[in-house]
Amino acid sequence: MPRIDLHTHTNTSDGTDTPEELVATAAAAGVDVLAVTDHDTTGGWDRAAAALPSGMRLVRGAEFSCVSDDGRGGRVSVHLLGYLFDPTHPAITAEQERLRGERVARLRGMTAKMADAGYPVDTEKVFSFLPEGATAGRPHLARALVAAGVVESVDQAFAELLYTGSPFYVPKADTPVVRAVEMIGDAGGVSVFAHPLARKRGRVVEPSVIADLAALGLTGVEVDHRDHAPDDRALLRGLAAETGLVMTGSSDYHGSNKTIPIAAETTDPEQFEALVAKAGGVEVLTG
Ligand code: AMP
Ligand code: FE
Ligand code: FE
Ligand code: ZN
Image 1 (cartoon, rainbow, N blue to C red):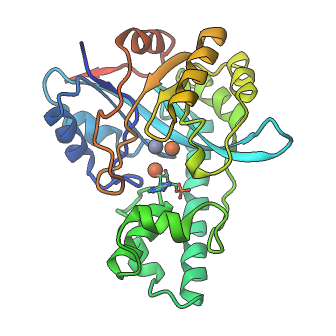
Image 2: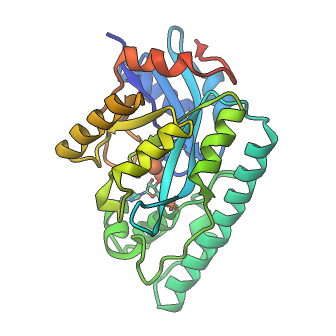
């Protein structure tokens, strides 16, 4: 059975592998189908494609930073995976560029707050972990904190200092998730709600929000993800069966910024075929 991992990051966003290294890591782990899904950018697509080993298939995607109603009268930040969309679609290029700018300003803001509180971090050091043109994220600040000896790991930096709502947290203006679903669909792609019940990251949406999005064109939901508890996975499977959403499973690999290995969670081949059958912006590439 093919090994399919539909959610991974490179150093074009907050992973630590280059696109070439990501593809090599996937090959070494026996991955047959790999999706590259950096935050708010398609900048790693061409390098991953050029490095594709013979026989491996590459699904080009991105993880969109969104905001959603939480189903309880509030708002919550969520992630939406978009796959196989046309990367030159004007609405997508404009929104991704805006978000990357938003992220740079926000990371500077968080760094300044920490420096003001006496932590040994500065903008230059934080941005030294960010290749030219890559998407900025809190993991870059986390790495600067590890390098300065403030914490021992990226995980510890998030748990103690960088979590959503911490005194150093600065929000960013994310895309309304309904708009993102529409934009990805307009560009010929398919959309999958990423880790919707990752409760350790903060508040999550009510299941009714996912069902409402399914009616508005959402294609799938990420069920098997490390941050999902067994009962939440079962709940999402039931929801997908009721609403016709495709179910995926993925590692959300970030290189050494997270401890999860590539392909630690995978997608069922039939579900993958159902997902691809609905997409038409760009092709699945074969090495
Ligand atoms: P940002 O995109 O700047 O809001 O930062 C969120 C990113 O930080 C996520 O995409 C993850 O890659 C990472 N992240 C979130 N929570 C943790 C955590 N507890 N430990 C390590 N990385 C995390
Ligand atoms: Fe990330
Ligand atoms: Fe995510
Ligand atoms: Zn991710």
